[in-house]
Length: 115
Image (spheres, rainbow, N blue to C red):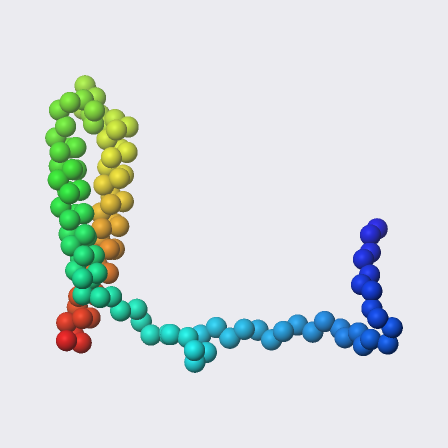
């Protein structure tokens, strides 16, 4: 068993370790606790990105559904792995585009209230 002992100078006072008080999280006066504010160009960009994402991926899913090349559907009209992977990409992009667009919309709406 290894025990490490710290060397203490003769006559030095040894104090027991006292735990420090818990840190304050949100009620410090030097912290900014207000909501984040987006600039007008950033808000419009996020809103436009959300709309663009929906436009592009809806078009892509329509084209994927009508695919006649044999990539999305086999000869018996069963969906292939290509179809499922790209449909998953489209659904994830719909969700992310919606989230980004909603953030942009809320930013534009907040800026109009303050103007």
